[in-house]
Length: 481
Ligand code: BES
Ligand code: MN
Ligand code: ZN
Image (cartoon, rainbow, N blue to C red):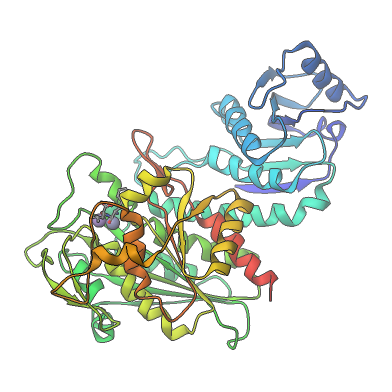
């Protein structure tokens, strides 16, 4: 799908040929004297278009424009949230009819955050998963044109949003694919594909290399499955080698059965999404290739399945991590932290400016924050603040969680340096405390995306989060250089 941004007033828009025209109107709309503006003013005055965000008025072959379908959509104060919900509703109203060319018009000068929200909402509303359908019904939309009188003022925001969409869609695609179509090997191949883009390189390690590195915790998780593990190293080089990179670490459990500590059957299928952190890292690299910021970024993905075969790791087993710390695996379902801890140790070799790991780590985080905000943990306040701000900026929200040392008490054991689980209380925090033991050598943050990476239930589907947050963060790193 193609996006374009055009500097057009309502009068200019009326001559655009398209299948559907969505006019976004905010509170306080000032009418000009062209036919489309007057119709809009009348619709508002008569109450046919209610003066409330999300309210729609749908028309067919309106005389005021060269479109087949027109939707007048109220966006209230034009906040990103209202723009998003109004657009999702408006697109639903016109989508069924083989929509190919869509024009979304801001009736007044557009706010930057509204433009960003509009681009993402158009993409979200028209994304379709097809990979494992025998008769795929592909996305029909080919071109989405955004119009605003002040287009030149919002051009940069628009371009960034389009690049974020490309990353979000790659992340959704891989997260949505079932585990037998998204094995660790296939994730490795996806990374190698990305390395064909300019400035991106990739290296994929297998069991032999990982074993030589001493990644005992990662290998312990992988050993219960017949699928071979992969450790993916992606590099984006947009700045001289001397500039310290930002490292992103994505949890890549391509299926989490729980292992010997097996999960209950209901909704276990959703554990195919347990590589959403990895998918978001792939997505970010896609966006970087388009935006080309002058920074260096490393992406690390420990990828494997968590399954319970005869060689599987057992509760009570003690393993030695790459850091040298021994870990008593009390619950094999707390596998995310085991693959991440070795990746965090591996990150040390890059002498990173900062390391951010992204993981569908705990059901507890989902209970704490639901699906609105991801959990943010940071050992470094500046990094925490920057990530929080990037979340607000991209409307890919997160919320800071605590890391008091007292939360680590429950991880103590007499049989190893640390246990992989504490009690049920504060589960998202104790998981983060476990990871923090492996990130002492750099500024570190952890995003627990268990609640935000996908929508659960009948219409289960990946959200592509937190690609928006991460890209916005990396662009802010680039801007501060
Ligand atoms: N991948 C899960 C976390 C998860 C659960 C994400 C449900 C989204 C929805 C993770 O590997 C896991 O199983 N965590 C356990 C940890 C527990 C054993 C300490 C959990 O949250 O129950
Ligand atoms: Mn698990
Ligand atoms: Zn998991």
